Image (spheres, protein in one colour):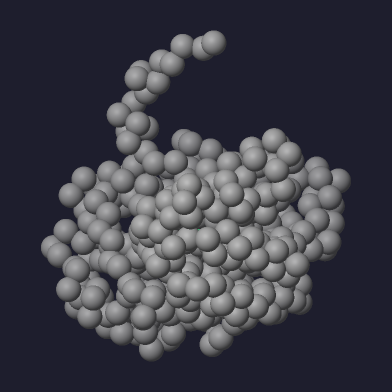
Length: 402
Ligand code: PMP
Ligand code: GLU
């Protein structure tokens, strides 16, 4: 037996919450290892393999000996591909010094928060939010301010709400569109209304997390930095994980004003250095290539979304909306709070998720991890058959709760 000496840990690490998405998928793996047939809809990663031409490019890079350290902000070839992509697809002009490549978009967000936040700085986080924003903000010393959007508004924050939440201490705003965990996509007019509010507050910066950019079923994507007056205060975060099915490659990037980019590169130079060299080489090829595989994957997600709306909408008491992107659905399940099947009682979204995991053997994530206590997140990055089976199990289990 080992002694628990965890009281020696720093105060900062003791107050850091664990990633609920990663925790839930680890629990699902554990149950699986015990021989249970668990369906995991808990983690946000495409159920597709990285396209062959990208894998081939990584092999080519290895054969060419691209195996050494890269410049801290990223391999020149990859940063060039990013600059071209941002120009071609998003109408944005950047130079090499404005791009920083990191080990996933997650590290980009951490770098940005560490670079910008002081202890009195408030960060407005559109809620429901992606699980890590709040912990990263706190870890970096900032004060998270959650701005909650209801399902009736497709989980989107309005410009009026934002205006009312801004104080003299507001330094940063963080949101994702398409959004994790709701799949909501802010329309161009909605983003313009938000930009109009910010034009009255010149010292507020914006992290626009566009990692689900390509997994969008509706209007063409709008980059927040492209809106009037927003370029010099927006940090665009993107990466390879979702649109190119490259979660395990750990490659993300930011495009930012030069002074922010160089601060982030300085942090990264002390913490991790440049991301994997041959991975970056392959990611450059991914960005330079036709988006055929990405579009095919997105079409598949859209089909599944329709199926999930129908199947989940059929479970008594579930309230679902129609997400326009990503591969998540975020039903309100509060109907079941306080209900019992005789042996178990569902108290809240956390216990809902645990009951479903332990009894229906489906892993999903409690909405509390995303700042909404009435909902749960299901990732539909799984085959149609798997999704049908998962929803059937959930429905059957809940049928006994009154
Ligand atoms: N932002 C959002 C909204 C995400 O959902 C994720 C991961 N699912 C990330 C950032 C981080 O992505 P990665 O670190 O894999 O690039
Ligand atoms: N971001 C993905 C998710 O929301 C992957 C897990 C994580 O990085 O937290 O499931």
